[in-house]
Image (cartoon, rainbow, N blue to C red; front, side, top):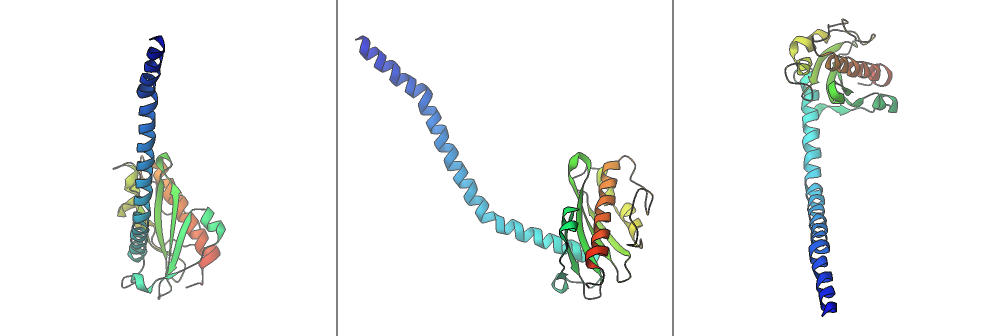
Length: 196
């Protein structure tokens, strides 16, 4: 009878400890497979939506009448890519737009789209500050800040006070814009000037 009791105890231990672990492992494997399949299905859709949003942002900073279909993608150097530049395009009129990013508050990226006219001046600037603190850091995306960059020559770098002052209370976010714009200026001067 003692042997039967030990066998019962071993069976109870299996049911109490090992069986739930096995069930959890199987659930994890099934969920992982489902997530992998979902990722495979949604990845192309996400990539296409990102491409469309990027093209829309390029068109927003380039001269009126520019369409996404008329843009030509430009090649940027490894140095520009490592400095935060993520892409560049040219428009039929000779304008060039550069996308760049830099770390803002809490290390979250601030994306900028900088348009350069044929003379090498900043024609327009679009800042995506949606990753920054609402009402404070996000103010670097407002027209009151970005419009001050228009007309600034690509022969120099931007900084606090040149051409615009930082947004009060948003030093990290403002510096992120300055750094991203400077990366775009360097890319324009080193890789793209005369490419359009």
